[in-house]
Amino acid sequence: MKLSIDNETKLIEEILQAYGVEKREATIVAEVITDGDLKGFSTHGLGRFPQYIKSIEAGTIKTDGDYEIEKESPSTALINGNHKFGHYVTVKAMDLAIKKASETGVGVVGIHNSNHYGIAGFYADLASIQDMIGIVISNTEPAIAPFGGNKALLGTNPITISIPSDDINNYICLDMATSITARGKLLEAKRKGEELPEGMALDKDGKPTTDPEAGLEGSILPFGGFKGYGLAFMFEILAGPLVAAAFGEGVKGTATPGVECTKGDLLIVIDPEFFAGSMQFKFYVDQFVREIREQNGVVPGDREVQNIATNYENGIEIDKVLYEQLTDIAKAKDLDITEYFEE
Ligand SMILES: NC(=O)c1ccc[n+]([C@@H]2O[C@H](COP(=O)([O-])OP(=O)(O)OC[C@H]3O[C@@H](n4cnc5c(N)ncnc54)[C@H](O)[C@@H]3O)[C@@H](O)[C@H]2O)c1
Image 1: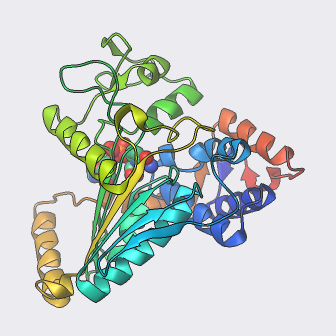
Image 2: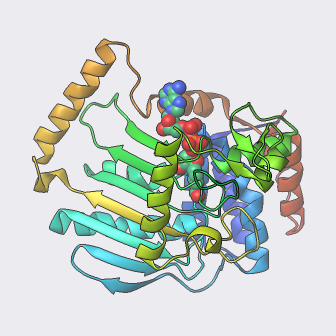
């Protein structure tokens, strides 16, 4: 089953509005989810949509009310998401961080009481589109065991850094989990009935496993041994206690639908104009990228650019289980979404 990117956007907007989400919020959620699928992060695209619907039904994603700014200074803010959609809260928080960075050189915004937001890269890109550097760090419910231990206690804690460029051919963005792979990869493999590659996950007794279910009950390895674990540890703190969010076992609701989400996010925006100057900064960034390309080297973001072109052209594959989940979600609100899909 195939779904074009345009139809994916329409489908998400239509379903969300039927579930009581305001149009402006539904549009943002659709844009972020679609961006995930376009860039090839299917683990954080439409595949996660059923989770959000369950959370709306359980009331852990709220369709009423709004986020609020709890604390503010010229360059910082702390946002209470009031359990709105993570996609919506994070876009609004990023807009605020960008505004602060344009006024003071840096904007740092913390978020708590938000929800799972899909791909971190979407939000960092909002800054680079405006010629600023965007950094997003989050924590998630436990997936990585402490170095030396075997019970998951740290999240898959993603980081994204997106860098502006003057060259239309450059998209410079690193968007990654600190686990060897995002938890979504295990969820997707479980849904599709596939095995995991070796070296990704441990079962609850700390033994290597290729069974996604056993990995979800156990833990996912950090990338790069201790160094990946070390970064996950630090991000647990930067996106946890710093922003009045939970940490370690206290982080819930990012992968378990219907459970109140207690994770946190830290958004950092830097305006190069306040440092080397925007023109000079981008000039040297583009020179560096050219030097990498002279060796046929890969730039962070290259894979996403290729995926965007392919997925825009061909649409995305929807597996049978996901298709059934989506049609059930639609049927519950008397919607017929079959026309959006192609064989
Ligand atoms: N919302 C959340 O709580 C949460 C948590 C964890 C991860 N995520 C998201 O999950 C997504 C997937 O994360 P991941 O770490 O599994 O991604 P990944 O390992 O597939 O890729 C990580 C980064 O490395 C680049 N990359 C990897 N291999 C490459 C290659 N061979 N050539 C060129 N570039 C390459 C990718 O383009 C990407 O920028 C990200 O969008 C991340 O933000 C979200």
